[in-house]
Length: 596
Image 1 (tube, rainbow, N blue to C red):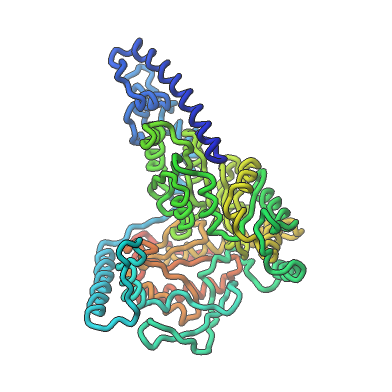
Image 2: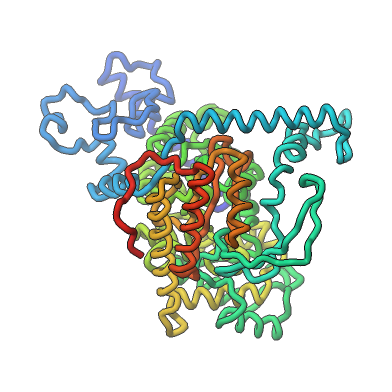
Protein backbone atom coordinates (compact mmCIF):
# COMPACT_ATOMS: atom_id res chain seq x y z
CA UNK A 1 0.00 0.00 0.00
CA UNK A 2 1.06 3.56 -0.56
CA UNK A 3 2.98 5.86 1.74
CA UNK A 4 0.69 7.45 4.31
CA UNK A 5 2.71 10.64 4.47
CA UNK A 6 2.08 12.70 1.34
CA UNK A 7 1.77 12.32 -2.40
CA UNK A 8 5.46 12.05 -3.31
CA UNK A 9 5.92 9.06 -1.07
CA UNK A 10 2.73 7.58 -2.43
CA UNK A 11 3.86 7.96 -6.04
CA UNK A 12 7.23 6.38 -5.30
CA UNK A 13 5.53 3.53 -3.52
CA UNK A 14 3.13 3.06 -6.42
CA UNK A 15 6.05 2.91 -8.86
CA UNK A 16 7.70 0.25 -6.71
CA UNK A 17 4.43 -1.67 -6.51
CA UNK A 18 4.02 -1.55 -10.29
CA UNK A 19 7.60 -2.75 -10.82
CA UNK A 20 7.14 -5.61 -8.39
CA UNK A 21 3.78 -6.43 -9.88
CA UNK A 22 5.17 -6.52 -13.43
CA UNK A 23 7.83 -8.99 -12.30
CA UNK A 24 5.13 -11.02 -10.59
CA UNK A 25 2.95 -11.00 -13.72
CA UNK A 26 5.81 -12.17 -15.92
CA UNK A 27 6.63 -14.97 -13.50
CA UNK A 28 3.01 -16.00 -13.10
CA UNK A 29 2.39 -15.82 -16.85
CA UNK A 30 5.17 -18.32 -17.53
CA UNK A 31 4.02 -20.59 -14.72
CA UNK A 32 0.39 -20.51 -15.80
CA UNK A 33 1.22 -21.21 -19.44
CA UNK A 34 3.38 -24.16 -18.43
CA UNK A 35 1.06 -25.66 -15.84
CA UNK A 36 -2.43 -24.80 -17.07
CA UNK A 37 -3.39 -25.28 -20.72
CA UNK A 38 -6.44 -23.02 -20.39
CA UNK A 39 -4.44 -20.11 -18.92
CA UNK A 40 -2.36 -18.88 -21.80
CA UNK A 41 -1.41 -15.45 -22.95
CA UNK A 42 -5.02 -14.34 -22.65
CA UNK A 43 -4.79 -14.18 -18.87
CA UNK A 44 -5.50 -10.59 -17.89
CA UNK A 45 -3.64 -8.41 -15.45
CA UNK A 46 -6.78 -8.39 -13.33
CA UNK A 47 -6.77 -12.20 -13.27
CA UNK A 48 -3.12 -12.25 -12.22
CA UNK A 49 -3.73 -9.67 -9.51
CA UNK A 50 -6.61 -11.81 -8.28
CA UNK A 51 -4.40 -14.89 -8.16
CA UNK A 52 -1.70 -12.90 -6.39
CA UNK A 53 -4.18 -11.96 -3.66
CA UNK A 54 -5.48 -15.49 -3.31
CA UNK A 55 -8.74 -15.20 -5.29
CA UNK A 56 -10.08 -16.37 -8.60
CA UNK A 57 -10.39 -13.85 -11.38
CA UNK A 58 -13.47 -11.61 -11.14
CA UNK A 59 -14.26 -12.98 -7.69
CA UNK A 60 -15.78 -10.12 -5.73
CA UNK A 61 -18.48 -11.68 -3.58
CA UNK A 62 -17.64 -12.61 -0.02
CA UNK A 63 -17.49 -16.30 0.74
CA UNK A 64 -19.97 -18.06 3.01
CA UNK A 65 -19.42 -17.41 6.68
CA UNK A 66 -17.95 -20.83 7.44
CA UNK A 67 -17.23 -22.16 3.95
CA UNK A 68 -14.13 -22.31 1.83
CA UNK A 69 -13.30 -19.46 -0.49
CA UNK A 70 -13.83 -20.15 -4.17
CA UNK A 71 -10.15 -20.87 -4.78
CA UNK A 72 -10.17 -23.77 -2.33
CA UNK A 73 -10.47 -27.15 -4.01
CA UNK A 74 -13.56 -28.70 -2.41
CA UNK A 75 -13.22 -31.94 -4.38
CA UNK A 76 -9.80 -32.65 -2.92
CA UNK A 77 -9.36 -35.78 -0.86
CA UNK A 78 -7.84 -33.57 1.84
CA UNK A 79 -10.73 -31.10 2.00
CA UNK A 80 -10.65 -29.41 5.39
CA UNK A 81 -14.42 -29.27 5.60
CA UNK A 82 -14.66 -33.02 5.16
CA UNK A 83 -12.29 -33.47 8.08
CA UNK A 84 -14.15 -30.98 10.25
CA UNK A 85 -11.20 -28.59 10.32
CA UNK A 86 -10.87 -24.91 9.48
CA UNK A 87 -9.77 -24.44 5.91
CA UNK A 88 -6.71 -22.14 5.78
CA UNK A 89 -8.37 -20.36 2.84
CA UNK A 90 -11.75 -20.04 4.53
CA UNK A 91 -13.33 -16.82 5.71
CA UNK A 92 -13.07 -18.09 9.28
CA UNK A 93 -9.32 -18.55 8.97
CA UNK A 94 -8.58 -15.36 7.04
CA UNK A 95 -11.08 -12.86 8.44
CA UNK A 96 -11.23 -14.24 11.97
CA UNK A 97 -7.89 -15.90 12.70
CA UNK A 98 -8.91 -16.71 16.27
CA UNK A 99 -12.13 -18.38 17.35
CA UNK A 100 -12.65 -15.75 20.02
CA UNK A 101 -13.01 -13.10 17.31
CA UNK A 102 -15.89 -15.04 15.80
CA UNK A 103 -17.44 -15.48 19.23
CA UNK A 104 -16.98 -11.78 19.91
CA UNK A 105 -18.71 -10.90 16.64
CA UNK A 106 -21.76 -12.95 17.61
CA UNK A 107 -21.84 -11.32 21.06
CA UNK A 108 -21.48 -7.84 19.55
CA UNK A 109 -24.40 -8.52 17.22
CA UNK A 110 -26.53 -9.74 20.13
CA UNK A 111 -25.89 -6.55 22.09
CA UNK A 112 -26.67 -4.27 19.13
CA UNK A 113 -30.27 -3.52 18.20
CA UNK A 114 -31.69 -2.20 14.93
CA UNK A 115 -35.28 -3.44 15.13
CA UNK A 116 -37.32 -2.93 11.97
CA UNK A 117 -40.31 -0.61 11.90
CA UNK A 118 -43.79 -2.21 11.80
CA UNK A 119 -45.43 -2.01 8.37
CA UNK A 120 -48.43 0.07 9.45
CA UNK A 121 -46.11 2.58 11.16
CA UNK A 122 -44.02 2.85 8.00
CA UNK A 123 -47.14 3.58 5.94
CA UNK A 124 -48.34 6.22 8.40
CA UNK A 125 -44.89 7.84 8.48
CA UNK A 126 -44.76 8.29 4.72
CA UNK A 127 -48.40 9.39 4.62
CA UNK A 128 -47.85 12.01 7.31
CA UNK A 129 -44.71 13.34 5.64
CA UNK A 130 -46.34 13.68 2.23
CA UNK A 131 -49.38 15.31 3.84
CA UNK A 132 -47.09 17.98 5.29
CA UNK A 133 -45.57 18.50 1.85
CA UNK A 134 -48.99 18.84 0.19
CA UNK A 135 -50.15 21.34 2.81
CA UNK A 136 -46.96 23.28 2.22
CA UNK A 137 -47.56 23.49 -1.52
CA UNK A 138 -51.15 24.61 -0.92
CA UNK A 139 -49.89 27.28 1.48
CA UNK A 140 -47.34 28.45 -1.07
CA UNK A 141 -50.01 28.61 -3.78
CA UNK A 142 -52.72 30.45 -1.85
CA UNK A 143 -50.83 32.84 0.42
CA UNK A 144 -48.27 35.58 -0.11
CA UNK A 145 -44.78 34.38 0.99
CA UNK A 146 -43.46 35.97 4.17
CA UNK A 147 -39.86 35.89 2.93
CA UNK A 148 -38.06 37.30 -0.08
CA UNK A 149 -37.69 34.97 -3.05
CA UNK A 150 -34.36 34.98 -4.85
CA UNK A 151 -33.85 33.14 -8.13
CA UNK A 152 -30.55 31.67 -9.24
CA UNK A 153 -28.81 33.90 -11.76
CA UNK A 154 -28.29 32.69 -15.30
CA UNK A 155 -24.70 31.74 -15.98
CA UNK A 156 -23.80 31.43 -12.29
CA UNK A 157 -23.31 28.37 -10.13
CA UNK A 158 -26.57 27.35 -8.46
CA UNK A 159 -26.78 29.01 -5.05
CA UNK A 160 -30.35 28.24 -3.98
CA UNK A 161 -32.02 24.85 -3.86
CA UNK A 162 -35.76 25.07 -4.49
CA UNK A 163 -36.69 22.00 -2.46
CA UNK A 164 -34.45 22.96 0.47
CA UNK A 165 -36.02 26.41 0.64
CA UNK A 166 -39.54 24.98 0.41
CA UNK A 167 -38.85 22.33 3.06
CA UNK A 168 -37.37 24.87 5.49
CA UNK A 169 -40.27 27.29 5.13
CA UNK A 170 -43.29 25.01 5.05
CA UNK A 171 -42.31 21.78 6.83
CA UNK A 172 -39.43 22.44 9.23
CA UNK A 173 -40.95 25.81 10.25
CA UNK A 174 -43.89 24.02 11.87
CA UNK A 175 -41.58 22.48 14.48
CA UNK A 176 -38.79 25.06 14.45
CA UNK A 177 -39.37 25.84 18.12
CA UNK A 178 -37.93 22.40 18.96
CA UNK A 179 -34.46 23.32 17.69
CA UNK A 180 -31.89 26.06 18.24
CA UNK A 181 -33.08 26.59 21.79
CA UNK A 182 -30.99 29.30 23.52
CA UNK A 183 -29.57 28.28 26.90
CA UNK A 184 -28.32 30.49 29.72
CA UNK A 185 -26.41 28.13 32.00
CA UNK A 186 -23.64 25.57 32.07
CA UNK A 187 -24.78 22.45 30.12
CA UNK A 188 -24.23 20.07 33.03
CA UNK A 189 -26.62 17.38 34.24
CA UNK A 190 -29.18 20.18 34.18
CA UNK A 191 -29.50 23.12 31.80
CA UNK A 192 -31.52 26.35 31.80
CA UNK A 193 -33.49 27.23 28.65
CA UNK A 194 -34.54 30.75 27.73
CA UNK A 195 -38.26 30.67 27.03
CA UNK A 196 -39.58 32.07 23.76
CA UNK A 197 -42.89 32.21 21.89
CA UNK A 198 -44.02 32.67 18.31
CA UNK A 199 -47.07 34.59 17.17
CA UNK A 200 -46.72 33.88 13.45
CA UNK A 201 -46.51 30.08 13.31
CA UNK A 202 -42.75 29.78 13.57
CA UNK A 203 -41.60 32.58 11.26
CA UNK A 204 -40.15 34.52 14.19
CA UNK A 205 -39.66 34.19 17.96
CA UNK A 206 -39.73 36.56 20.91
CA UNK A 207 -38.22 35.97 24.35
CA UNK A 208 -40.69 35.96 27.23
CA UNK A 209 -38.15 36.93 29.88
CA UNK A 210 -38.65 33.66 31.75
CA UNK A 211 -36.41 30.60 32.02
CA UNK A 212 -36.97 26.86 32.40
CA UNK A 213 -34.60 24.58 34.32
CA UNK A 214 -34.44 21.14 32.68
CA UNK A 215 -32.76 17.79 33.13
CA UNK A 216 -30.16 17.73 30.36
CA UNK A 217 -30.42 14.63 28.15
CA UNK A 218 -29.26 16.40 25.01
CA UNK A 219 -25.63 17.46 25.56
CA UNK A 220 -22.52 15.31 25.01
CA UNK A 221 -21.40 15.78 28.61
CA UNK A 222 -20.52 12.10 28.93
CA UNK A 223 -18.22 12.27 31.96
CA UNK A 224 -19.78 15.32 33.57
CA UNK A 225 -16.79 17.65 33.20
CA UNK A 226 -18.93 20.47 31.75
CA UNK A 227 -19.36 22.21 35.08
CA UNK A 228 -18.67 25.71 36.37
CA UNK A 229 -17.19 24.38 39.60
CA UNK A 230 -14.43 21.97 40.50
CA UNK A 231 -10.75 21.51 39.58
CA UNK A 232 -11.26 21.85 35.82
CA UNK A 233 -13.11 25.16 36.02
CA UNK A 234 -10.77 26.56 38.66
CA UNK A 235 -7.58 25.75 36.76
CA UNK A 236 -9.05 26.99 33.47
CA UNK A 237 -9.98 30.27 35.14
CA UNK A 238 -6.45 30.63 36.52
CA UNK A 239 -4.98 29.94 33.06
CA UNK A 240 -7.25 32.56 31.49
CA UNK A 241 -6.01 35.15 33.99
CA UNK A 242 -2.37 34.28 33.31
CA UNK A 243 -2.40 33.65 29.54
CA UNK A 244 -5.54 35.32 28.23
CA UNK A 245 -8.40 33.90 26.21
CA UNK A 246 -6.77 33.53 22.79
CA UNK A 247 -3.34 33.16 21.20
CA UNK A 248 -4.21 35.32 18.13
CA UNK A 249 -1.78 33.29 16.04
CA UNK A 250 -1.34 29.93 14.36
CA UNK A 251 0.61 27.09 15.93
CA UNK A 252 3.49 27.42 13.45
CA UNK A 253 3.99 31.12 14.21
CA UNK A 254 3.49 32.43 17.75
CA UNK A 255 0.60 30.22 18.87
CA UNK A 256 2.41 27.35 20.58
CA UNK A 257 2.84 27.42 24.36
CA UNK A 258 4.25 24.94 26.82
CA UNK A 259 0.67 24.06 27.72
CA UNK A 260 -0.02 22.93 24.15
CA UNK A 261 3.10 20.76 24.13
CA UNK A 262 2.26 19.26 27.52
CA UNK A 263 -1.28 18.51 26.35
CA UNK A 264 -0.01 16.72 23.25
CA UNK A 265 2.38 14.59 25.28
CA UNK A 266 -0.37 13.75 27.78
CA UNK A 267 -2.75 12.82 24.96
CA UNK A 268 -0.16 10.47 23.44
CA UNK A 269 0.37 8.76 26.82
CA UNK A 270 -3.37 8.55 27.39
CA UNK A 271 -3.87 6.79 24.05
CA UNK A 272 -0.76 4.63 24.24
CA UNK A 273 0.85 5.92 21.04
CA UNK A 274 4.08 7.70 20.12
CA UNK A 275 2.80 11.22 19.53
CA UNK A 276 -0.28 13.42 19.13
CA UNK A 277 -1.24 16.82 17.76
CA UNK A 278 -4.16 18.96 18.95
CA UNK A 279 -6.39 21.39 17.06
CA UNK A 280 -8.72 24.17 18.10
CA UNK A 281 -11.85 22.78 16.38
CA UNK A 282 -13.19 19.24 16.38
CA UNK A 283 -15.01 19.48 13.04
CA UNK A 284 -11.88 20.84 11.36
CA UNK A 285 -9.80 18.00 12.76
CA UNK A 286 -11.47 15.73 10.22
CA UNK A 287 -12.32 18.21 7.49
CA UNK A 288 -8.85 19.80 7.22
CA UNK A 289 -6.59 16.83 8.00
CA UNK A 290 -8.04 14.21 5.69
CA UNK A 291 -6.95 16.20 2.60
CA UNK A 292 -3.40 16.12 3.99
CA UNK A 293 -3.41 12.33 4.24
CA UNK A 294 -5.22 11.29 1.06
CA UNK A 295 -5.43 12.70 -2.46
CA UNK A 296 -6.62 11.80 -5.97
CA UNK A 297 -5.53 8.26 -6.75
CA UNK A 298 -6.29 7.08 -3.21
CA UNK A 299 -9.29 4.98 -2.20
CA UNK A 300 -11.31 5.49 0.99
CA UNK A 301 -13.86 2.96 2.25
CA UNK A 302 -16.27 4.96 4.40
CA UNK A 303 -19.10 3.72 6.60
CA UNK A 304 -22.45 5.04 5.35
CA UNK A 305 -23.20 6.58 8.76
CA UNK A 306 -19.97 8.57 9.08
CA UNK A 307 -20.13 12.16 10.33
CA UNK A 308 -20.51 15.24 8.11
CA UNK A 309 -16.97 16.40 8.98
CA UNK A 310 -15.61 13.17 7.50
CA UNK A 311 -17.71 13.55 4.37
CA UNK A 312 -16.50 17.13 3.88
CA UNK A 313 -12.87 16.10 4.39
CA UNK A 314 -13.21 13.34 1.80
CA UNK A 315 -14.74 15.74 -0.71
CA UNK A 316 -11.93 18.23 -0.20
CA UNK A 317 -9.29 15.52 -0.61
CA UNK A 318 -10.33 14.48 -4.11
CA UNK A 319 -9.85 10.82 -3.21
CA UNK A 320 -12.20 8.15 -4.54
CA UNK A 321 -14.73 7.20 -1.87
CA UNK A 322 -16.65 3.94 -1.71
CA UNK A 323 -19.39 3.68 0.91
CA UNK A 324 -20.12 0.37 2.62
CA UNK A 325 -23.19 -0.61 4.62
CA UNK A 326 -23.20 0.46 8.24
CA UNK A 327 -21.02 -1.82 10.39
CA UNK A 328 -21.39 -4.57 7.78
CA UNK A 329 -18.12 -6.47 7.60
CA UNK A 330 -19.24 -8.68 4.73
CA UNK A 331 -20.00 -5.63 2.59
CA UNK A 332 -16.75 -3.94 3.62
CA UNK A 333 -14.74 -7.01 2.62
CA UNK A 334 -16.63 -7.27 -0.67
CA UNK A 335 -15.82 -3.66 -1.60
CA UNK A 336 -12.26 -3.97 -0.31
CA UNK A 337 -11.55 -7.18 -2.17
CA UNK A 338 -13.02 -5.91 -5.43
CA UNK A 339 -10.88 -2.78 -5.40
CA UNK A 340 -7.70 -4.61 -4.41
CA UNK A 341 -8.23 -7.06 -7.26
CA UNK A 342 -9.24 -4.54 -9.94
CA UNK A 343 -7.15 -1.54 -8.92
CA UNK A 344 -7.84 2.06 -9.90
CA UNK A 345 -10.03 2.14 -13.05
CA UNK A 346 -8.94 5.73 -13.79
CA UNK A 347 -5.33 4.56 -13.93
CA UNK A 348 -5.91 1.55 -16.13
CA UNK A 349 -6.21 -0.90 -13.26
CA UNK A 350 -2.97 0.07 -11.54
CA UNK A 351 -2.89 -0.28 -7.73
CA UNK A 352 -4.33 2.53 -5.65
CA UNK A 353 -1.79 4.86 -4.04
CA UNK A 354 -3.37 4.15 -0.67
CA UNK A 355 -6.45 2.35 0.57
CA UNK A 356 -7.93 3.66 3.82
CA UNK A 357 -10.83 2.33 5.91
CA UNK A 358 -12.60 5.17 7.74
CA UNK A 359 -15.00 4.49 10.62
CA UNK A 360 -16.20 5.98 13.91
CA UNK A 361 -15.83 4.46 17.37
CA UNK A 362 -19.39 5.29 18.43
CA UNK A 363 -21.69 6.50 15.68
CA UNK A 364 -23.28 9.71 16.90
CA UNK A 365 -26.71 9.23 15.32
CA UNK A 366 -27.07 5.43 15.52
CA UNK A 367 -25.58 4.71 18.94
CA UNK A 368 -23.74 1.72 17.48
CA UNK A 369 -20.14 0.74 18.24
CA UNK A 370 -17.62 -0.04 15.53
CA UNK A 371 -16.71 -3.69 15.01
CA UNK A 372 -13.07 -2.81 15.56
CA UNK A 373 -11.43 -6.26 15.94
CA UNK A 374 -12.98 -7.42 12.66
CA UNK A 375 -11.97 -4.25 10.84
CA UNK A 376 -8.40 -4.58 12.10
CA UNK A 377 -8.35 -8.16 10.79
CA UNK A 378 -9.57 -6.96 7.38
CA UNK A 379 -7.11 -4.08 7.39
CA UNK A 380 -4.20 -6.43 7.99
CA UNK A 381 -5.45 -8.97 5.48
CA UNK A 382 -5.72 -6.45 2.63
CA UNK A 383 -2.85 -4.16 3.70
CA UNK A 384 -5.05 -1.07 4.10
CA UNK A 385 -4.76 1.88 6.48
CA UNK A 386 -7.30 2.44 9.28
CA UNK A 387 -8.59 5.87 10.35
CA UNK A 388 -10.70 5.74 13.53
CA UNK A 389 -12.83 8.71 14.61
CA UNK A 390 -13.22 8.44 18.39
CA UNK A 391 -15.17 11.69 18.84
CA UNK A 392 -18.03 10.06 20.77
CA UNK A 393 -16.12 7.10 22.20
CA UNK A 394 -12.97 8.63 23.71
CA UNK A 395 -13.52 8.98 27.44
CA UNK A 396 -16.95 7.36 27.22
CA UNK A 397 -15.92 3.80 26.31
CA UNK A 398 -13.53 1.28 27.81
CA UNK A 399 -12.47 0.51 31.39
CA UNK A 400 -9.91 3.33 31.26
CA UNK A 401 -11.93 5.72 29.10
CA UNK A 402 -9.62 5.08 26.15
CA UNK A 403 -12.38 4.80 23.57
CA UNK A 404 -13.16 1.89 21.27
CA UNK A 405 -9.52 0.78 21.29
CA UNK A 406 -9.64 0.45 25.07
CA UNK A 407 -13.14 -1.07 25.01
CA UNK A 408 -12.03 -3.96 22.79
CA UNK A 409 -8.55 -4.23 24.28
CA UNK A 410 -6.78 -4.01 20.92
CA UNK A 411 -3.29 -2.66 20.34
CA UNK A 412 -3.45 1.10 19.59
CA UNK A 413 -0.68 0.59 17.04
CA UNK A 414 -3.09 -1.51 14.95
CA UNK A 415 -4.99 1.71 14.22
CA UNK A 416 -2.88 3.86 11.91
CA UNK A 417 -4.68 7.16 12.63
CA UNK A 418 -6.52 7.84 15.88
CA UNK A 419 -8.76 10.89 15.76
CA UNK A 420 -10.96 12.30 18.50
CA UNK A 421 -12.51 15.46 19.88
CA UNK A 422 -12.38 17.18 23.26
CA UNK A 423 -15.92 18.56 22.97
CA UNK A 424 -17.70 15.59 24.53
CA UNK A 425 -16.16 13.66 27.40
CA UNK A 426 -13.68 16.41 28.32
CA UNK A 427 -16.19 19.26 28.47
CA UNK A 428 -14.03 21.47 26.28
CA UNK A 429 -13.39 22.14 22.58
CA UNK A 430 -11.03 21.06 19.81
CA UNK A 431 -9.71 17.73 18.59
CA UNK A 432 -6.61 15.59 18.18
CA UNK A 433 -4.92 13.14 15.85
CA UNK A 434 -2.58 10.55 17.34
CA UNK A 435 -0.37 7.79 16.04
CA UNK A 436 3.23 7.27 15.06
CA UNK A 437 5.75 10.09 15.45
CA UNK A 438 6.30 10.08 11.71
CA UNK A 439 2.59 10.67 11.10
CA UNK A 440 2.40 13.55 13.57
CA UNK A 441 5.58 15.19 12.25
CA UNK A 442 4.06 15.05 8.77
CA UNK A 443 0.87 16.76 9.97
CA UNK A 444 2.81 19.49 11.77
CA UNK A 445 4.11 20.67 8.40
CA UNK A 446 1.20 19.76 6.11
CA UNK A 447 -2.05 20.11 8.06
CA UNK A 448 -4.10 23.20 7.19
CA UNK A 449 -5.71 23.02 10.63
CA UNK A 450 -2.25 23.32 12.21
CA UNK A 451 -0.57 25.76 9.83
CA UNK A 452 -3.39 28.22 9.11
CA UNK A 453 -6.02 27.96 11.86
CA UNK A 454 -5.84 29.86 15.12
CA UNK A 455 -4.17 28.03 18.00
CA UNK A 456 -6.26 26.39 20.71
CA UNK A 457 -7.28 28.82 23.45
CA UNK A 458 -5.18 28.35 26.65
CA UNK A 459 -8.16 27.95 29.04
CA UNK A 460 -9.62 25.38 26.63
CA UNK A 461 -6.32 23.49 26.61
CA UNK A 462 -6.16 23.64 30.41
CA UNK A 463 -9.69 22.23 30.73
CA UNK A 464 -8.65 19.28 28.56
CA UNK A 465 -5.37 18.75 30.42
CA UNK A 466 -7.03 18.74 33.84
CA UNK A 467 -9.94 16.49 32.88
CA UNK A 468 -7.65 14.04 31.05
CA UNK A 469 -5.33 13.90 34.06
CA UNK A 470 -8.31 13.07 36.25
CA UNK A 471 -9.43 10.30 33.88
CA UNK A 472 -5.91 8.84 33.96
CA UNK A 473 -5.81 9.09 37.76
CA UNK A 474 -2.79 11.39 37.70
CA UNK A 475 -4.52 13.83 40.04
CA UNK A 476 -4.16 11.27 42.84
CA UNK A 477 -7.89 10.53 43.09
CA UNK A 478 -10.33 7.93 41.79
CA UNK A 479 -12.68 10.60 40.40
CA UNK A 480 -11.97 9.77 36.77
CA UNK A 481 -12.47 6.02 37.20
CA UNK A 482 -15.66 6.63 39.17
CA UNK A 483 -17.05 8.79 36.36
CA UNK A 484 -16.28 6.12 33.77
CA UNK A 485 -18.02 3.43 35.84
CA UNK A 486 -20.98 5.69 36.59
CA UNK A 487 -21.50 6.44 32.89
CA UNK A 488 -21.45 2.72 32.06
CA UNK A 489 -23.99 2.00 34.80
CA UNK A 490 -26.28 4.85 33.73
CA UNK A 491 -26.10 3.77 30.09
CA UNK A 492 -27.06 0.15 30.66
CA UNK A 493 -29.80 1.02 33.14
CA UNK A 494 -31.36 3.64 30.86
CA UNK A 495 -31.25 1.42 27.77
CA UNK A 496 -32.69 -1.61 29.57
CA UNK A 497 -35.53 0.41 31.06
CA UNK A 498 -36.42 1.77 27.62
CA UNK A 499 -36.39 -1.76 26.18
CA UNK A 500 -38.58 -2.95 29.05
CA UNK A 501 -41.23 -0.31 28.35
CA UNK A 502 -41.43 -1.38 24.68
CA UNK A 503 -39.97 1.50 22.70
CA UNK A 504 -37.50 0.84 19.87
CA UNK A 505 -33.94 1.99 20.46
CA UNK A 506 -30.93 1.75 18.16
CA UNK A 507 -27.34 0.91 18.92
CA UNK A 508 -25.19 -1.07 21.33
CA UNK A 509 -26.16 -1.55 24.96
CA UNK A 510 -22.90 0.08 26.12
CA UNK A 511 -23.26 3.20 23.95
CA UNK A 512 -24.15 6.41 25.85
CA UNK A 513 -25.85 7.71 22.69
CA UNK A 514 -29.41 6.34 22.84
CA UNK A 515 -31.66 6.97 19.82
CA UNK A 516 -35.36 6.25 20.50
CA UNK A 517 -37.35 5.82 17.30
CA UNK A 518 -40.60 7.80 16.99
CA UNK A 519 -40.75 7.66 13.16
CA UNK A 520 -43.50 10.20 12.41
CA UNK A 521 -42.30 13.75 11.83
CA UNK A 522 -45.17 15.16 13.87
CA UNK A 523 -44.27 12.95 16.83
CA UNK A 524 -40.74 14.36 16.96
CA UNK A 525 -42.16 17.80 17.72
CA UNK A 526 -44.78 16.41 20.09
CA UNK A 527 -42.22 14.49 22.16
CA UNK A 528 -39.70 17.36 22.36
CA UNK A 529 -42.38 19.89 23.36
CA UNK A 530 -43.99 17.61 25.93
CA UNK A 531 -40.68 16.67 27.53
CA UNK A 532 -39.69 20.33 27.71
CA UNK A 533 -42.90 21.17 29.58
CA UNK A 534 -41.96 18.38 32.00
CA UNK A 535 -38.50 19.93 32.45
CA UNK A 536 -36.52 17.44 30.34
CA UNK A 537 -34.34 18.80 27.52
CA UNK A 538 -33.77 16.40 24.61
CA UNK A 539 -32.78 16.51 20.94
CA UNK A 540 -35.14 15.51 18.14
CA UNK A 541 -33.72 14.37 14.81
CA UNK A 542 -35.60 13.93 11.54
CA UNK A 543 -35.32 14.24 7.79
CA UNK A 544 -32.97 15.27 6.17
CA UNK A 545 -30.53 14.51 9.03
CA UNK A 546 -31.97 10.98 9.05
CA UNK A 547 -33.99 9.02 6.47
CA UNK A 548 -37.73 9.76 6.46
CA UNK A 549 -38.37 6.41 8.13
CA UNK A 550 -35.97 6.98 11.03
CA UNK A 551 -37.19 10.04 12.92
CA UNK A 552 -35.94 9.81 16.49
CA UNK A 553 -35.31 11.35 19.87
CA UNK A 554 -31.63 11.14 20.79
CA UNK A 555 -30.75 10.88 24.47
CA UNK A 556 -27.16 11.46 25.59
CA UNK A 557 -26.31 10.12 29.02
CA UNK A 558 -23.82 11.51 31.49
CA UNK A 559 -21.91 10.30 34.51
CA UNK A 560 -23.35 13.34 36.28
CA UNK A 561 -26.90 11.96 36.10
CA UNK A 562 -28.21 10.35 39.27
CA UNK A 563 -30.52 7.34 39.41
CA UNK A 564 -33.32 9.58 40.68
CA UNK A 565 -32.95 11.88 37.66
CA UNK A 566 -32.95 8.95 35.24
CA UNK A 567 -35.97 7.38 36.93
CA UNK A 568 -37.89 10.65 36.63
CA UNK A 569 -37.03 10.95 32.94
CA UNK A 570 -37.92 7.30 32.26
CA UNK A 571 -41.27 7.60 34.03
CA UNK A 572 -42.15 10.66 31.93
CA UNK A 573 -40.99 8.94 28.73
CA UNK A 574 -43.12 5.90 29.62
CA UNK A 575 -46.16 8.12 30.13
CA UNK A 576 -45.59 10.01 26.87
CA UNK A 577 -45.00 6.77 24.98
CA UNK A 578 -48.42 5.51 26.05
CA UNK A 579 -50.09 8.79 25.11
CA UNK A 580 -48.44 9.15 21.68
CA UNK A 581 -48.25 5.45 20.84
CA UNK A 582 -44.47 5.10 20.74
CA UNK A 583 -44.21 1.51 22.00
CA UNK A 584 -43.53 -0.08 18.63
CA UNK A 585 -41.20 -2.86 19.74
CA UNK A 586 -42.32 -6.45 19.20
CA UNK A 587 -39.51 -7.96 21.24
CA UNK A 588 -40.32 -9.80 24.48
CA UNK A 589 -40.07 -7.52 27.50
CA UNK A 590 -38.17 -8.16 30.70
CA UNK A 591 -40.81 -8.92 33.37
CA UNK A 592 -38.54 -8.29 36.36
CA UNK A 593 -37.45 -4.86 37.63
CA UNK A 594 -34.22 -3.58 36.06
CA UNK A 595 -31.40 -3.33 38.58
CA UNK A 596 -29.28 -0.19 38.66
